Every structure is written in C-alpha cells, then in structure tokens.
Image 1: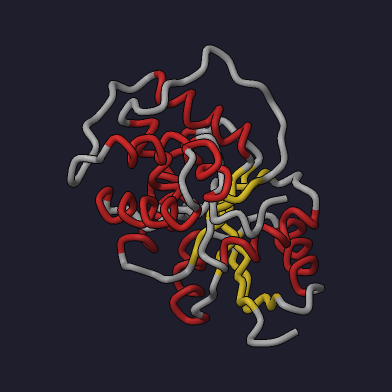
Image 2: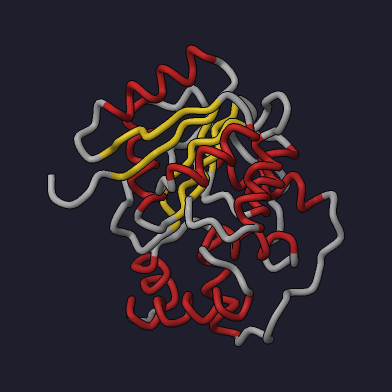
Length: 237
C-alpha cells in the first residue's frame, strides 16, 4: 500500500452493526476506522475532531438523525464525504439525504466487498449508487413533485444530452460512445454542468435532472442491481 490510508468513521445506533462495519473496514490495508458514533450529534463532533475522508451514516437514529447530520455537514462545508447506509431503499429520508449532499447510499445488507469498494470510490471523489434502486428512489419522488426550473445558467443542448446520459448511470466513456464524442469532451461538458448547476458531484446533478423533469420516470422500475459508480469509468464493476 502506498500513501495514507482512507480515514473512515462509522455512524449507526445499533452496536452490532457499528462494530461489524468497523471490523470489515479495518481489515482492509488501505482503510482506517478513526472513530464510531451512535447518533447524529456524536457524528458531528466526531467528524469535526477526526476529519475523516468518508462517513458511513445511518439515517434513522435517536437524538439527531443521519439526514439532519448530513445537511449540517453540507451546510458547514465539510470535506468529509457521506455514504448513507439504510435498510430502506425507497425512503423519503434517503432521498432528502441525497439532495442534501450525500455521495450515495448503500443498503445495509450489501456484501462486505461492495461496502469496501464503495468507501474507496467515495473517497476518490466519485458517487456510489445502486443504479436500479437509486433510479427507483428518484423516480418515485419525482412523480409526486411538480418539475422545478434548472438553477444557474441555461444548459446547451449537448450539456442536456450529457446530463440525461449521466442520469442513466453511464460513465464518461459510455457517454462518449453514445453521443459520438471524445471522452475528454465529455469530461469538459460534465465539469461545466457541475459549475452551471452549482453542485459538487454527478449524483447531485442527477437528482436535479429528475427534479427538473429532464429525466422522465419510467412507468415501473424493477428491484435489484449491484452498486455502480457515477464517475469516470475507472471504478466500474
């Protein structure tokens, strides 16, 4: 292993879950658990003190839930990336956490190797989501909300095409193949999109695409699917 390990904190109100997650992550040579917390209040203090790269955040907890803690971390400009852990893949709180700035979510019954991979991907600056379940999540809540206007500068037709392709979980390479443009050109479009929309990563841009009606919910969505990176394709499974 070269370089410093990825620093992680684990936040969950169930002792066995918290301990189990910490053991899995600490067993990896490039990961280091620097603290654990049992609720959102403890999590905020821990993140401020330990400055981790990634925070595994449960949603439903006493005193202060994971949603509020995630919103507070985003509000104060924390560099720590939040990866939401939940039992419920169709949950208003998970949807709000993604809108608040979480880098993605995983179900608690995900395999250990999927959890480890997700932490690495989030630490690298990409977003992790289970494409089928995340798409169902976004579509479910988009159906019950009137479309809103895209914030910031108007998008070009090509930028809209790239945003729609991103919403399908495509990597830069795959977007380039679909739109017949170079990967470097896709990267330029993505960077401009994030700047125009005022978001920090691709997942936040995808949430906006659904909320603004650029991506229309399908009549029905299936269940299942493994996690996938919304990134540059380097972490695709």
